[in-house]
Image (tube, rainbow, N blue to C red):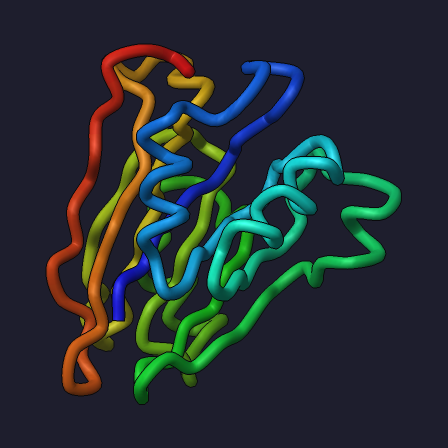
Length: 167
């Protein structure tokens, strides 16, 4: 099962649209996981139209229809792997322990907010992934997103993709 992980898309405030490479990854994925800060409901509509399956949450910049249609925390089980998707997790200091305590029944936590890519595994085995932002790199050298696979009940092939432009 192929996954595309995105967050902090901020369309149309930070970019007019997602980069073509990200749209291709959405088209190729079996499931798209979006960790919030869509900004406009039209992007949610467009991703829902193109994605085979979508799981996502709202972020701190999402209001109105986005908050009506999306949860604060999305949960999905994919071929035996339990995911939670949340926008904010607080500071990087102590994140692994804090999130392990908050999400004890989860295998993978996908989060956003910082625009900083993150891939760690806590002592409890919880995998924490932040795909960064494909449209607003902030102080990062590249705009980013992630892809991954779920194979035989395990998360595999997690790849951070660097985009050549800001989108």
